[in-house]
Image (cartoon, rainbow, N blue to C red; front, side, top):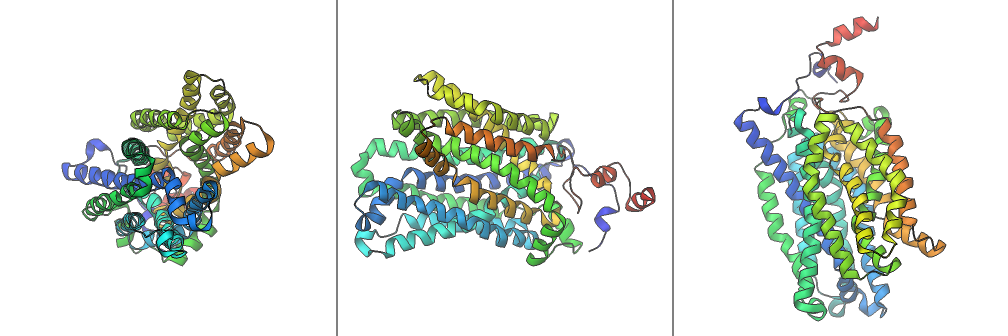
Length: 473
C-alpha cells in the first residue's frame, strides 16, 4: 500500500466553494440515495402492515389459527434480517472495490424486483408448499440486498456532501427512511379503509407490493445518472482499493475498535428505531388496550413531526458537532425511557402522545446523525465494508428481535414498562460507545486516515508524513 494519501494536507470542502456543477451532482447524489432508502423501508413497512393477509394466503393450508399464520408470515422478517450480514459481507467489500454507485444500482434493482414479485406470487391454496418457499426466497433476496443498500447509500451520500454541511445533507437519507415507512403506513391504512378487510383479502393486498416496481425503476434511473464520489475515485486511481478478502482482513486486523464502537451505537439505534416505530402500535394495543387504528395513526403523526425536524437537527450537528447531540440522545434514552413509557400507561391520549413524542425526539436526534457519523468511523478504502459489516450484524441480532424480546419479557414478567427498561439498557450501551467516538464534524473523509483521529488532525493543519515522523523522533 502506498503512502501518497498521507503526504499532503487534507482538503476540506465547503458548500460555499462548490461550483454549480458540483452542487448539482451533490444534490442528485442526495436524492438518489434517499429515494432508494425510502423504497427499502417502504418494503419493510408494507410487509409488516400486511402480515395478516400474507399469513392467510401463504400459510392457511398449514394452520387454521390466524395467530400462527401471522407468526409464520413474520418469520419472513427474521429471514430477511438474518441475510443482511451476508449481504453486508459480500456487497460492502464489493463497493470498496468497484465503487459505491454500481453496487447501489444493483441493490435497488434487487429490492424493487423482489418486492414487486411478492405481489404476483400464487397463494398456498393454489400451489401448496411452493408458495411460502417462494415467499421466503424473495425475502432472502431482499435481506441480502438490504445488507448493502443502507450502508452504501449512507457512504455515497456522505462522500458527496461538503464537509461543513455533511450533517444537514446526510439527514435526508433518514428523511427517506421515515418517508418510506410513513408512506407504507398511510397507504395500507387508507387502502383498508376504502376496500375493507374482505377487499384486501381478495386482491388489494397485492397492490402495495406491485407499486414498488415503478418506484424501483425510477430509483434505478436516478442512480444510473449519478457520478462516483471524488473521495472514492482518488484512491481508485491511486491503486489503493482492496479485494474483498483483503478489505475484510484489514477491518479485523486494523479497525476492531471502530467495529466495536459502531456495534455499540447500532445496538442503541436499532432497539430505539424498531421499538418506537414498529413495535409501539402493538404495545399500545396489546399491552395497554388502545384501539389498533388509533395507535397506528398516532405513530404516523409522530413520524411526520420527526420528518419535519430531522434536517434542522442534522444541520445543528454541523455547528455544534456530532458527539454532543449523540451523547445527549444516549443519556436521554438511558434516563427518560422508563418515565416516557410510564406516561403511555396513564390512560390519557395526551400523555400517550407525550410519551411517544419524547422517545421520537430522542430517536430523531440519533437518526439525523447516522449518515454523517458512521461512514466517518472508517477510512475510504474500507468505509463501505466496515459500515455494512458492523451495522448489519448488530441489526440482525438486536434490531429485528427487539419487539419480540420485549413482548416475550412482558409475557414472562407482567412488567408493562418493559419497553422502557429495554430502551434504557440499550441507551447505556450506546452511550459507552459514543463517548469513544472521534468528533468528525467538518472533517475530511478523503484518504486512508481515520477522520477525526490525531493523524487526520495534524494533516489537516498542514503536517506532512515526513514532519510526523520527525516529530515522533
